Image (cartoon, rainbow, N blue to C red; front, top):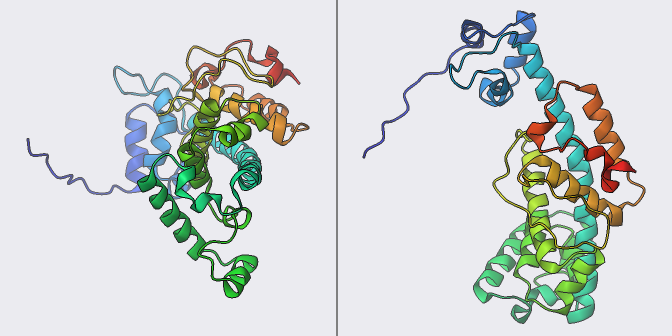
Length: 297
C-alpha cells in the first residue's frame, strides 16, 4: 500500500488558540497563552493537554484549562532538571570507577584491546565512535597530550572524560564477562547484569531530559531489570517498572554510593508538594512510597 504524503499547512498561533477553545479548553488569559505558544510549540504542548481530553470524544473534559496544562508542563520541566543534575554525578562516578578498575586489571589502554570485549566488530565500532568524540574535544590537557605523544588515544582516565554516558554504558555492556566487570558492579552493590541494565536505563532517561522531552507520565520503551538482591537499600518493586518512579528509585539507589548525603528525595518531595494536582499514579508511584526506606531518609 502506498502511503499518502502529508500536505497540511502550518496554522498560526491565533488559529491554534481558536481550535483549542472550540474543543472546550478554558483559556483564562489568552494573551499569556499566545505568548507561551509562540515559545513552546503546540506539538510539544499537546502532550500536556492530553490528560485533560476525554479519550472517547477527544474533546476537553469539564473545567480543563490551559493554565492547568501549563502547570503540568512546568512540573515536568522542573523534574527533568532535578534528575539531570543527579545523573551527572552518577555518570562521573561510573566513568571514574570503570577506568580505575579496568586499568588495574588490563593496563591503561585496556579499552583498545579486542580481547577484553565480546564482539570484535562491535569493539571496532566502539573505538571509531570514541575517536570521533576525541577529535571534537578541545580540552587543553588532551590537546597537549596529542602534541606530545603518538598514541591514537590518551590513557583511559583521559579518554573517558570526553566519552558520552551512552558510550560508557556501551563499553560496559560489550565487556567480556569476568572478574573486572563484576568488580565494577560490586562497587555499587549490584550484579553485572543489573548494572548493565540500570546504566542503560539512566542513559535513556538522561537523553529524555537533555532533549527536553516529556518525562513525568511517560511509559518507558525500555525495562530496567528487577534485581534479585542489592547490597544497599532499594524499594519493594512496583507492578509497573516502566514508569518514572522505578527509574527515580534506581537513581536514588546509585546516589547512596555516589553521594550518601544527597538531598534528592527531599527535593523531589518538595517539588511534588508545589504541584499537588499531579497524578502520581500516572508516574508509577505506589500509595505508600514515602514509607520506603530508600525514600524515607
